[in-house]
Length: 177
Image (tube, rainbow, N blue to C red; front, side, top):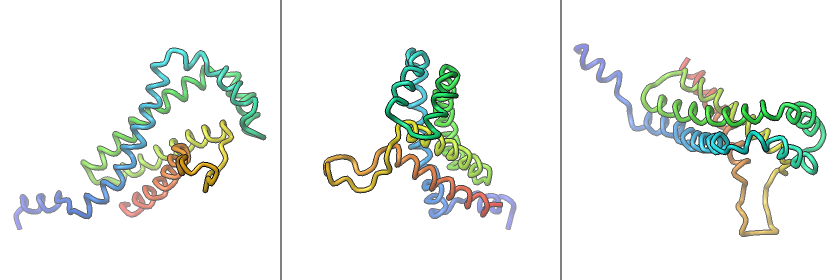
């Protein structure tokens, strides 16, 4: 077999490989877009940074309980400008990383893309967990009071997808090692 044919076969991507690539890249495009838009909305809103402290003060008055309320009041509220900037740029950067890694995954087969996915989804998990804890959102299951309401909030959906994708990408990176 000549070297051209060997290279052609080496670069061949089977339909099952494409299905796997899409199953890893699809959620990354969706969550990447969500985080990118969320971050850009905050960056281009000239009042986000200046009003972040007031927003936190309002949230903590009836919101989070226990240790998390103390963290928000003692650490985040006293450095609200720093944390507002950290949040808005982290969200936008996370969106770009997820979208970039999704494209990278479609183009090339690499263990490192799955490692990038793992770290990006860890960041996604903790960003959304922070939001859920700051709002003291209860874990939702079945809502019989309002059958017309959404079955699950977007926040918990992002949390569960992030957790699942951490595990899936970690296992895939170990398999490619």
